[in-house]
Amino acid sequence: MDIKIVLGIEIRNKKPVIYCKNNVIIFDENNYSEIILEDKHEIGSVFNFAVENIENNSASILIKKILINGIEANIFHNTSFIMKNNRWVENKTLKSVYRIDYNGTFALDITEQYVVPIKSQHWHVSNTINDYIFVYNFTNDMFDLKYKPRNRDNIVSNEICVLGDSWTYGTSLDNEHTWPVILEKKLNETVNNLAVPGAGIDLIYNNFVRLCKEHSFKKIIIVLPHLERRVIKCRVDDGKFYRVPNAFSPANDNNAWRYANYPVVMKKRKHVEEQMVKDIDCVYSKKIIKKMISVAKKQSIHLFLSSRSEDTYNFLQSLTLTNSRLLPFYNINWFKERAPNGYHPTLTHNDHFVNLILDQI
Image (tube, rainbow, N blue to C red; front, top):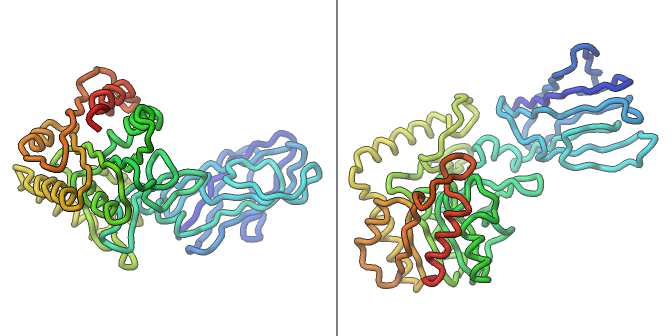
């Protein structure tokens, strides 16, 4: 892999000295807005460079960008700086470094946990085709490569589980403004927000089935999206499975290193989208909804269903729900305001929805 670290230098009264691959990096004091350090590395290695000649706040070095095979990475993730040979401070290691004000060695740890989220645009790449489908969360300066609620560190069994797409996840909203957290506060019960942005009905069903095998919940509440969405899935590197909803739009940089731009993935996406066009009545998603209701009935799961799509909700209304309950429709047009991205619902919408369903949960 080609690793590039882009630095910016702030000189106050003394020029710092930078070493990379045991060589001094030469830069013009009058043109140091962007210095690029570049090297080849594989997973399991460390990209590092050393800094000297900084004393008493004489200069600062900024980590402006980190590029892996031309793709920009999070500048905080997997970075550390070992401070040494400083007259004013003791030697110690700093984590999540983006600004260097002391002498020492900067290190970027090239791990699988670092590389895979960059290559997959944060979508989980699994070893089995039946694993959870989700987007990695960036917390505590690293990506958690596990399926977890947005609102807690781990899935809490024997409590309430919520599934859905970005409206339930709370895209563009603070966690406290999402409807699962509002519901949690009003019920005074634990609610796991396991929604996945971009999810279609097949993705939700995939996660629903696996969750029911691994956990037991008091209740499962699902707000279904449009019927048209589908999962794109195929085998990629080292027998791994890449699975994303078609609603996910890959970056338009055409970088061949991204999973989304693999020929096999692009071919699969085209095939799925052709199948969607042919499925005028959305038979594919309707069958999956029926399967989900059947699984809930067989396993005596307390399932509560709603939707933010009129077509999906109308289909739910047409079904005979013997062991599941239909909740009120989630209507974006309740209020004119929208989340900061201009599309998603707001705290006002979410609070209203919770008030509508509270007595029925």
